[in-house]
Image 1: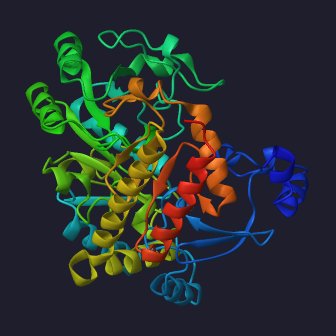
Image 2: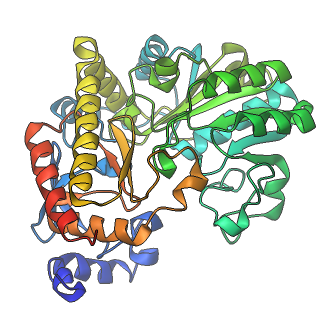
Length: 440
């Protein structure tokens, strides 16, 4: 199918985009959504299925970029929203749902001695970094190449740099990622490649007494769903303890998706602070910071400033309570199902590519995974992903979209509790047809 023929599938989305561009910057609310063939406008969704404004139906593996762990319009969330809509929408003061959800997080998350709510993951990360600096009296933050911690100046560094910008693995260079980003943001950040404890050790030997915290995605979901090497997270914990730095897990994606107790529970490594979002409220805007009581309480008598009109919003917290209750039900059956189905999907995609003689490596843990068209059978860090065949990925995603399977533009897939056997078999059949259109 030619580009012109393909675009004929989405005339309404194209027309709506033109209208949106006359009022909305770029025609979209997030630049990440501006993708081939046209930013799609949707009119309906239920469970694991989406319908766009042209009436095309899709199996949804984007899940709104991750939050919809229970799928679209889960009855428990619909009911929670209905009840919340009949109550005051915001108080700007305390209410019962705040401590009920905080208590639920305490029950589930190992590090959660105390909890603080924000509206977005970017805000949660900023709070965690401020708390870490206040708790240690230091300024430097160590982050990793390919890891995403929000779009703020202080952390939008070396997220997706080009190979020629990065320096050597032993001497990585911090790379800003946006025009308008203040250059001195780099002054307080050190960068290391993922899964290289030797480089982290060296950086601490050189500047350990100035490093406030190590921040990381415990699974590198934002750059290909790369898993930590055996012993790697434990090694980071030991280094942080030895030098008096904090360990921060950015569990915006892994939290309430990898397991009920997050990646920290799965790997048995306890961070000092952790950020949560996306799946936390099943689709409503809510994020949180959880961690040691002594650190979180610095906001109350310890001189750390923090605030937000929408912190603890009743509507979002009602959704969070409903989501966490559903995820807890029957000893976490929903997440077990999502991860088991996701692993079968990963295996099926790999096998389909092998049959076609197409090199494809699928990385991840089931409920979050990603496609890499590469000859590498194992990817350890962001630098390895730079060898991916991006053109082949783009073609495959386009063919899947035409087959009614909707993935994120970086080749990421999220699997929800609403995905089932029917979606799995349809997806693998569509993948076979899409792979047949790629050149070996």
